[in-house]
Image (tube, rainbow over the protein chains, first blue to last red):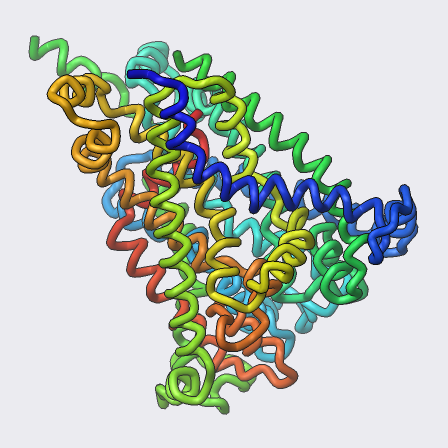
Length: 286
Length: 286
């Protein structure tokens, strides 16, 4: 009944499609990165060229800011929201649904709506900040080089913290009631409960979600691309957008491939740490 | 017996103080919903009311003119249709392949299974920017750039690994004894799959469908690269076009955003439980 060949038959079609769409392009990227556009082998020339480009170190630093800035606040806000939603109060179901909405809507809708709200002259945000005198005059959030990347990070935080909240909430709700009762018998306050019961219990969830957020931050470039395309003056250029622009705006496929290879190498390390973490979480649960 | 049950309630009830719950919930709802409220409001304003300082909180003459522009004078309806075709196509195709693959993974032991399963998971987490160049070249060679089939195929990168991953865990949760009984009664493997396993995993199938549909509906970067002709462009691209033209018509952009968000919002609000279930399963189940 458990014939090996039958199992292969079932999984084969899906794996063929994935092979065509993932394994082949990855291998092909490697090939492109060491050849010129005629297909001649050129060694590491593409790598040298793209590493020598002025935009590359800028994009690298921006990517670091983008990833870390996004994740720190996504996790903190997400955990706080989860603790709030874990309380018993009337209307909790509605608040929980509403919280998920930023995460569900298309990234491009979030991007355009925020771009309009951040409009220098007619944007509601400048109005809300200038009217009570929080800032003296309207700020060009999306044109000013020193505000544009933090603003992009803020939009990304707004978009993704609901995901953290819902994952952590699921973790909080699976904590056995005994643990709370034990803490209460010992006279723990609410914040002690948060610190000594909730956070240690959901730590595996937080670790897994954080790694997933790193992967997604490298993956989801819609918000930045749709609002600024990496500008002004490369202030919001992150590496995935640089790959995209090198390939499709400068039509330097081989240099884009070289950059992809390096980007891929970094991303795959994160992916493997994530898979190891999942495996060890599953091991603990058993 | 009753004394034991009553004991926990006699302990001091700990939780967030009520004022904090109220402030937190109001803040959370405001942050999550305000952009959409402003989007809806801006979409029914006249041009003059959009561009005034200070901004108008409630339009004195609400107008549907922006919607008329979007629905009758732009390509948005066509893009809407394209989005439906591509999302339904790639979700459906991925589901069919995933049903077989997941059944193979859940019910058979064969050599290399853990490796193949990791391959599927890596596929789900792979940074799209890293493979976009070779994918473009591959599609060009196959003559699939600017076709529905091209996008449907490419979107399987997003939908297929996720569907396989989620369905495998659903299938594993169904007791194998049911199938063994059927096989003794003379059913074939395929018969087992379609008569026993699938009917029992309908909630799983629906959450895979919903999640995959939303993912493809929201996708931006692949569509931007592989659909440059208006006959196949999807809604996210249409929206981006609206807002990057020289003079952005913000009223129309906001109306188009509403049109694009509505299907997702309805789908999400009507199937929230399945949606959230699928999402949490897809992200951390090992």
